[in-house]
Image (cartoon, rainbow, N blue to C red; front, side, top):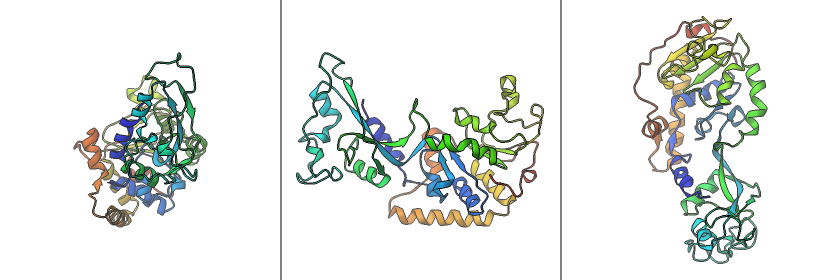
Length: 338
């Protein structure tokens, strides 16, 4: 209905502005060492990719900005409303930098930015003047991250599909009420059954169905929570929470297999890397990632991801970083596939 606010926010969150944290790079090191079965993430910022984690080992459960798809658009009965919502589809819409013979329609041979207003799809007696009268599905064409970035930088908000020239192009992130990506549904059960250990990093474990992954590993698989606060503790849940809960003191579940590091994710990942004998490789990989981002930024300030999140959501308040729990970290380490 009104996509401009979302795309304004998208500009601020767009990949390329933030440097992956030590935690992201730790996941990459696990992959390098052949220890990573899969990384499931709720993050949409593509920082796992930026850290160098292979794409085939990542499942972005809530999608990400890595790609975008033509989803279509709705039409209204009011020409002025249409023009205000999609000014770049009409003559004089503010894209004077586009030449009249420029083909920006992805091979259509016409200037879609100067196309006349589409005809209304339903009689004007239906729908209100500012509500979409009908929704026309998009062509489903996938667009690369660089293309979307260019459209936003040129003020084309919302970006319009380069193939069909009509549909709004939406980053492939999952909005509330939308289905999770097919890749998540296809892989999660087999992956969790195959895992030898489960690391849970920096989460509230409050969003379903992602939170249910905790209970899908086999009953004796070790599980480590690295977090600033205890979440999904069996002792605090009605009925113990079943398998989808942590039992840090061994009083609820049949097998005592859960461990806790209470503190910052970066601190927990460093300690785990140290226990695995991978701390030097972690530091080397972190330095490599920082150098790569410095080169890519070409003079543009690059913000550490944890700093941007601290400002945006106050998620990184100072807390003790000492390990807490009844199961020592070295008891769950070994020849594991995480």
